[in-house]
Image (cartoon, rainbow, N blue to C red):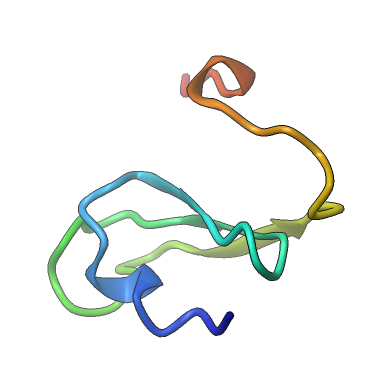
Length: 56
């Protein structure tokens, strides 16, 4: 339920379904989030998928 695995994820957008925390992971699987950070917390009952994001 914590966010300890977020910083090592290879994904650009990381969602923790246990906490609702949403992160931008600027540097991929390299340690830390680079210049990224948590940018939102959404209700955990909300359905979230790749189709819900557009990176420009």
